Amino acid sequence: MGIYEHVEIFAGLPVVDAGDAEATVADPGAVAWRISMEEFEAPPEEFEAAFEQLLQRTGPAGPTALVVGEWGSAYDSPFPYQLLVDNVVRLSGLRALFVGDLTGEECEISWIDQADITPVIEAFPALERLWIRGSESLELKPVRHEGLRELVFQSGGLPAEVVRAVAASDLPNLTHLELWLGVDQYGGDARADDLAPILAGRSLPALTYLGLRNAEIAEEVATAVAAAPIVARLTDLDLSLGVLGDTGAETLLAGQSLTHLRRLDLSHHFMSAEMAQRVVDELPGVEVDVSDPQQEEEWGRYTAVSE
Image (tube, rainbow, N blue to C red; front, top):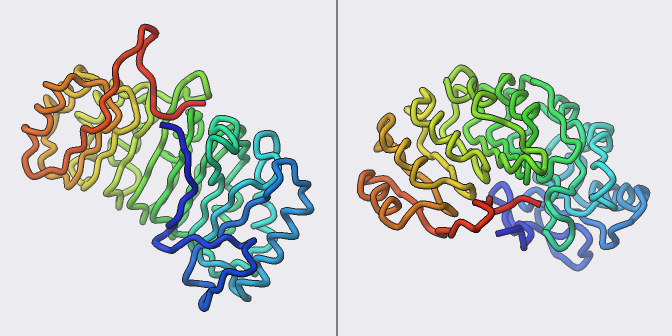
C-alpha cells in the first residue's frame, strides 16, 4: 500500500500549510497547521525559523493541532522534540500533534528518524492526540498522562520496547490505541507477549478502539486476541494491513464472541474468499471489512507497509 498522501484532516480539523502566506484563516485555532521544509537537507535553523513564524501566526496559545512533515533530513536527523518542550508556554493550546507526515516519495517510513518522545508527552498534559510516523531511534518510557485520548504509532517495524512502554503506561482516558507492528526486518520485534498487559485489560481502562495493524505476526496476534479480556469492552477491533490468513481467522471465530463489536477491520489479508465470507456471515450486525485480499508470493506474505 505505502503512504502516498499527506493528511488533509487531523483531529477533525482541516490541515492548512503554515508556509502558505496567502491562506486566509479567520480563526487559527479552527485548523490544523502543517509545517514542512521544502528542502530535504534544510538546516535546523530553517525549521526553527519556520516554527517561530508559525507561533507568531497562531497567537499566544499556539496551534490547536500541529502536523509536522519534513523537518530537514528526516531520514538521518531525529525530530527536535526539545523545540516543542522549550516553547511549551507558547503552545498552551496544543491538543493534537502528528510528527512524521511524510509520504514514501519523501522518505520511506522505516527511514524516518524519531527520538525519545517521553519528554514531549510529559511537557504537554493537555495533549489529547499524538500520532508518530516512523520508528528509527524511537523511544518511549512508561508515562502517566490523563489527557491522551488517542495514541497512534505508524511504522514499518515498531520496537518491542516501545510496545512494552505503552503497555506499562498509565493512560486512564485513552480510548484509541493504534500500533502498526510491522516486520522484524525493519525493527518490528514485538511479540504477542509484549501486548499482554493491554490484552488482559490491566492497562488502558477506557480503551474502545484497538488497532494492532500492519503486523507480520498477525496470526500470533489473532490467537492472543481471541482470548483477550479487553475485547469484551471494545467497539472497534482493527487487525488490518497485516498477513492474516485462514488460520488466524479461524482462531478469531473459535474464540470469544465478537458480535458486540461495531466494526472489525481485517482488510489487506490473505484469507481465502470462502473464509472471508464466513467471517462476514458469522458476525451479523458487525461492520466487517475483508476488502483488499492479497495473494501469497513464493517468498511468503507481506504487510501493507514495511520499508
